[in-house]
Length: 256
Image (tube, rainbow, N blue to C red; front, side, top):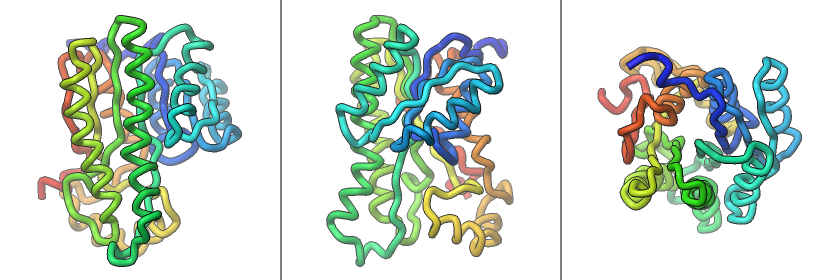
């Protein structure tokens, strides 16, 4: 095995949720590995801002407006990538949402929002990508951003834990079903990073830093840039016989 197996040069990768945090880091990481990036956000300006940063460094990227809880937007994202670049090779599903509060206080609508923004959105985007892969007849790679919250219990994250556990199950089901088409489906499961998707979560990263670090065997939180490597591995030829797996990227949190 050589490092060339990790090279994504010329491959077209759709990435959802590229405006900030892990998604933005994934977009930059995939571009640095040679991929052509078509990334979306719920704000065109935010998606295009990340795309412009990639282009400024010599990469190729396209920003797309899409709400991936909507099947028509998922399809439009794939169509935009194929229209511009002629094909699709990789789909990285990252966009998500979270509400942190005691489970006893969750309204039904809030539960639905968390499930829709994570599990439903991932299924719809994977479905749109798989249809394109099947039309092309050359297989493809789908990589989902899950969480160590799918593997362990966290206070005030009941629906989020359920959604992420659903993603892990979805990975196994789709890998089995779509494997005969040459489509690989995997997930990486981040632990605590220095960036949270919510203001309340960001506050906790500050106030709870000592507890988080003390509970993590590597004794630190991850930088969001450290999520790019595992995702690139799962999307690359280095993982050509890997499908249906969830890869913990949590500094040993779930092992401790």
